[in-house]
Image (tube, rainbow, N blue to C red; front, side, top):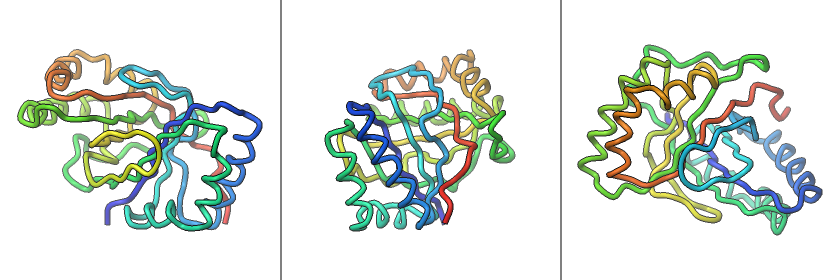
Length: 213
C-alpha cells in the first residue's frame, strides 16, 4: 500500500505561540503512526513561492493521513496554530511505481541526513509535461533519486495548494542540489518550464528523534 504524507509549508508570524503549537503537534504524532521526514531543516528555495518552514510527515497510507488530519484531536492542534502562522497544508498520496534508481537511499543519520525535493505544480500542457517526466529519470538516477510522491491523489486542507505534488528523496543534501544543477536535469527542466508552473525547495531531511508513543 502506498504511504501518505502531510506536505506542509509555513510562515511563522508569532514564534512564542508557534512553540505551543509545535509541542502539541509532537504530542499528537506520538499517539499516532506519523513520523517526520522533514522538520524545518536547512533548505534552498529554487522556484516559485517560498515559505520559511517546511515539514513532511509520513503516514502508513493516504487514507490514514487524511483521517489523522480531520480527527477532532488534531483539529484542536490546528486551532493552536491559528493566527501564529500562515500555512499551506496538503495531504498527498505516496508513489509505488517504477523508480529511477535501483534502491531507495538510506534513511540517513543526524550527521548525514537525506536530502529531498519538495515540489508543487500546476500543469498547463500535459503532453509536454509527460516529455519532462520521461526526460528527468536519467538525471535522478545519476544522483540516487527516489520518488516518494509523484502526482498521486492530494487534498489541500489548509491555505493554497497546487494540483500535483512531488517528493523525491536523495542520499544527502549535496546530491539533491547537484541533481537539480546538473546539465541533464536542467535540460529536462526546460520542458517543464513551458508545461507547468510551481514551487520547488531542496531541503535537508529529519534524522533526529521521532515522537515517542
